[in-house]
Length: 384
Image (cartoon, rainbow, N blue to C red; front, side):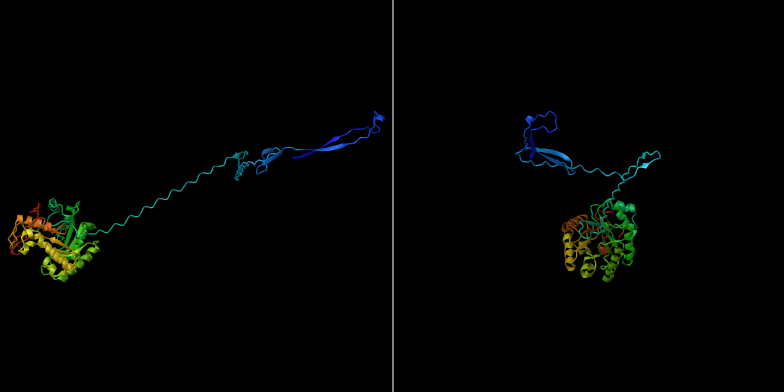
């Protein structure tokens, strides 16, 4: 920056009273002061936020002032001293303070397990099975077959999706369940005595032990109207059985089984059932040869289905291997095979063949053409 500096050009004279006076030499003196302007460099000082110098810059004349560099950030202030006072012992020495212990972290809350889906209520399959066969657990003397005998019989029965039983005596429900365990066979069970509906329903429930998935359907009576029972009584028994079984957890089909003629003449028993269940044997027609059995049975199924609007299941059909002829219907091994082939060709489902083995416990006579014992698909039972 410009500075003004005075310079003096001065001649000194001797004052009076001084030594070494020379009078002849005394002259008049004038003092002259000149001011000279001198240009000096500019100095810029940079300071931080606390007023402390951090850098300087010298600017020469004739040069523009540089852009100042940003000041470095101020250091953070030191943390305040701990407020905890020192604990002095008797010697005046500071006692070490206990170090704070880390707080234990709470254990993570366990993830809630998803609630298991409720088990679907077991539902019986009813119509739609591919093949079935009927079975009776009696010896030739009408005594009950043992658990072991039933198991022996079922070593020969395989490939059937439905096994039809007619009653609950002889522990047959539990024995057949045990004999078919591990297979995909379901039982078409029967309440035989209309006067014992509740008791037989209880027996079925006890044997099933809650596993109704093993049951295809439950029938109430077998050919009762054909034998002369009032249809109203049969319908009442169907309702009673349905309520009794529902009380035990069963929600599958409940029906009555009767002949095709009884179903046509009394469609109300079919309408009271969850589907129509008919026993239909071409042999008793007398006008149908064995090889036409399938056509005969199919005609009745279609007729009843059209009249009632319901699905029809054939719960008995077949052909005897022995007995007396009934018109063109002749019992024999060959005719038995022909009839079976014809029926299988007419149906691909919803047919139960009669019967697994010959029923030697039955009585024969003219009304049955002495053929009642000999409808067994596999001949005599292995347990006989």
